Length: 210
Image (cartoon, rainbow, N blue to C red):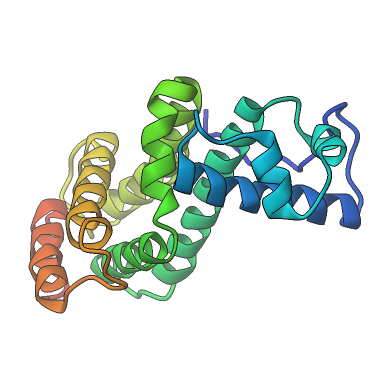
């Protein structure tokens, strides 16, 4: 079943008003910075609340533990990167264009949010189930879009889920090599052009010649 995003609540399950939602989001953003800079084990609720500019008591209105806020950071990053990729991809008129626009958006997001890589890798040890949820939330709509493209004849027939996982793996490692490790703010043009040729061949599309 495709995972869905749910509205944020207080730690006791109550729905949040606008002010509460903003405070909760501020804590998530502060936690993203702290976890990225210090790592999960050296991070603390004190450091997170200091970064957010709120008291420790406020933290416990929204989160029960450091682990819970870490999991929320993972899912928040996931939601934002999916939104960025979807928004960019929707501007394409063919499947190939949508693929390349989506990849471009992913690389821009990771350049602006290097915590995405650092925190996701920590999730493997801190909260493996959240790590799985992160990738599943990326893969499910991606595979669904590829399946539709296969049915429309835009993409070579095959297993859309295997194709989605494969393309995600390419994007993640290429971004790690040329953005995260280099500390660059954008993917080198020559690298992206070569990647575009690989992607178009991988999906079996012939509607553009990158």
